[in-house]
Length: 177
Image (cartoon, rainbow, N blue to C red; front, top):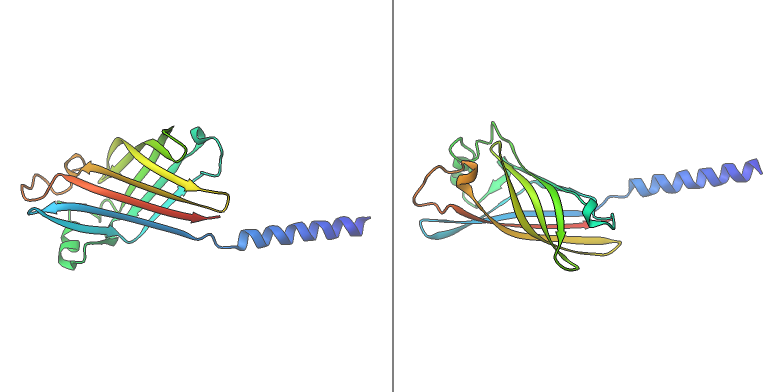
């Protein structure tokens, strides 16, 4: 009997070790678009992470936390990217990350939610309501969000007349359990 229990415990421990050793596949894309001299400039942040608990069936208990590494900004123009890291834009030395933290979720339909978030850029925190679409099952899910911010609210780019104050942001997050 002791031998059977020991074998059962070894089997459980082995399977738990196997499950925790498996890699979880994730994909995060944070893209933006802003007009400069009337021309759209597309860019992205190449390093971003998102943490969630969407496996919880009660959406009121969900949370969403995102981090973007500022010095990974990429507009396909290295001179512009370097300038965007300076103090008049993102001040990446002093503020290396952009953070987003959910406060609440409101269900609109089966896949769409309005999410109240705190967005912090350059140490300035603003509460926003952003639309989020979440589609998934027990194996994976995909989160998409498109929203606009006013860069001046976060003291990014000063009062430039040639740079639009509106920034369009797109987030795409895919997660496999």
